[in-house]
Amino acid sequence: MTDLTPHGDGHLKFATQSDVDLFVETLERYERGELTPDQWRSFRLLNGVYGQRQVGQQMLRVKLPLGRASADQLRTLAQVAETYANGRAHVTTRQNFQFYGLSLATAPEAMTLCAEAGITTREACGHSVRNVTSNPLAGVDPSEPFDVTPFADGLVRHFLRGPLSSSLPRKFKIAFEGSTRDAMRGPIHDIAFFARVENGKRGFRVLAAGGTSTLPRSAQPIVEFVEAGEILGLSDAIVRVFHREGERNNKQKARMKWLVKSIGWDAFKERVLAEWELVKQEGAPRFAFDPANAPQESVVAGAIVNLDAPEPRSGFAAWRRTNAVVQKQPGLFAAFVTLRLGDLNPSQLRALASIAERFSDGTVRTTIDQNLVLRHITGASLPALHAALDDLSLGESGAGTFADVISCAGAHTCAVAVTASRGLAERLNAHLQGHAVARGEATGFDDASIKVSGCPNGCGQHHVASIGFQGGMRKIGGRALPLYQLTVGGGSVPDAQGTLAGSRFGRLVGKVPAHRVPAALDRILGLWERERTSGEKLDDFLARTPIDGVKKAIGELFDIDETTALESDFIDLGQSEAFSVTEGEAECAA
Image 1: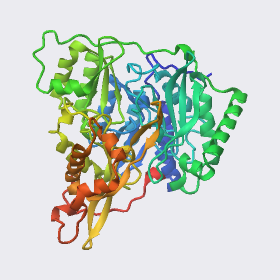
Image 2: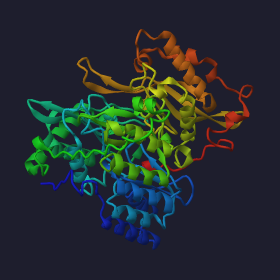
Image 3: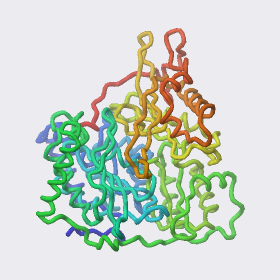
Image 4: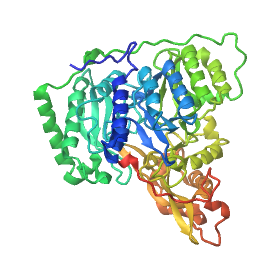
């Protein structure tokens, strides 16, 4: 039996001091010359420490399973950002926090601080089972058949520090979804669990072998339904097959999707199911709780604090439309906190910790849209909550909307990125702030998204965006000019019964110079306005519209040469110096 405690005092603690002690010991061995640079790098990455583009600086990734953090953990993260990093905490598209500008000498101190708060960096990076993500509304979503939280939490604890979890051919990603919509982009994962109830029993539809990057592949069903209590054994079987048969020489073709490409889906599925039978014969791992009556978190709503408060502030109505959603618990709301580019400073983190204790249940959840969620908010508290967030410059509307542009870290810190993707995301965010979609007043933008990545690896998940941008470059008169490959029509695909059938990957339209991207976006929206059918959503329109039609709408914006390029075109967005491409080693493939 796996000892799991999904809820209670320890349910947000995943760290052990022994992990940090081993990191320090291994660093000392490396410094004494007992380990090769490759051996040290592999170990370092498995413990969440990445080299940055800036020589001598490290990025620290802390692992937040299911995106959950307590108020005290937020205060710890604030101290890490303030004391050891560059003063910025960044929420990623895998619900983690990342910190930049650490030195290797002080990284163990930051890791110790995190460990004391129960926060781990173990297997946050490297060839491991990465952070398990889950819908941040799990447990409160009115559409869910049951709360997936205890099952996702149990799977995290089952794999963390497991015998195979840190020695895989390549990284391995898992997501849980309980709602009727694909909020977690499940089909781009190595394993995706979708909650179902059949014949009165809780269970999951399980998809496997998805991914993006240079081989976008939609995950396919391994089983249409497995009882919830059996998912640990099935997951073990999938990981064991990948561990045994995955590519270990060419890291560019080492994800599990490449194994499927090599042997075919039918052969892969057959091997997984055969391995599952072996796992059962050996005594499949099981949850310590009864899956039919899984423990649920206690709903501790914040106090009704605004009875004597002034009138709602300007912007509250728009914020409530886009950022507050009704929970299945009567009278309670979940409130999304809009984080532009996923960033927070230490003061904001500490204030959010107090806000979570005052208005909510003392916890937050991160989202794959790089935002935060406060849950169990009373309806009467919403105006006061908005005012408290507004005082922190966190009261913007539009969280998770088309106007909330997603971006990877890009060339600001990532050694392999081509372009400064954050600069483009920031420009597009500002460009769309006056748009009705940011206030929740526009129709037709349901599930539509803009996502930006600085390279083909796709950490910004641009492959599955309605409108995606992938960083690149072109030589004009011997000078490097930043541009973006524009794709349209990415998203989720339902079947005739409304069940998720898989992911739809964006189709390439062309390459747009970076400074012309906002104008290209306007032309795409103009095309939709002119040619959509009555009530047609942007997502559906871009999925069906011929690429030639989109190209024609963008027109001359694609064309640039020595006679039409401006000096500003040779400077990347958000930068001040001439654009250049730095060849760096991709530690994400190390």
